[in-house]
Image 1 (cartoon, rainbow, N blue to C red):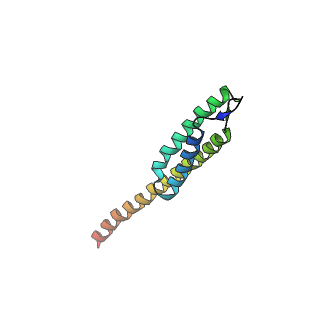
Image 2: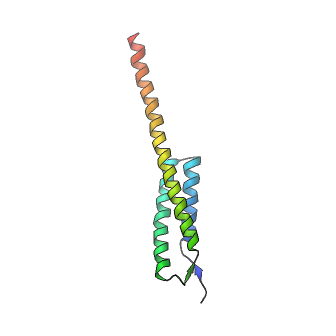
Image 3: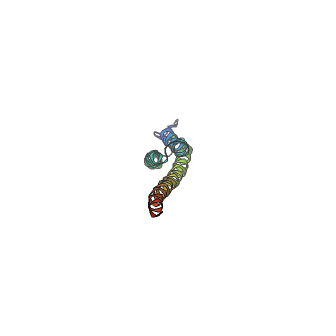
Length: 104
């Protein structure tokens, strides 16, 4: 019996890569979406593999994609927190500079 590629394995890997690249390059919070999609697809692909492991190959792509999705999710959350702190700091500076100049 020949093994066929596991459905969704390449999608999981692609979503994991996009989540890491997206969180580092352009849009951290939007990369959370790709991480979550990758994790959901990994769960369904692994459940399909566990039903009939002899039918499918490429479980390593699912495991790699899941790890990349977790890394992308962590990086996205870090970027989100840093963005909130950055804009909060700018707003604090703007609001405090207005009060400071009025006192003199």
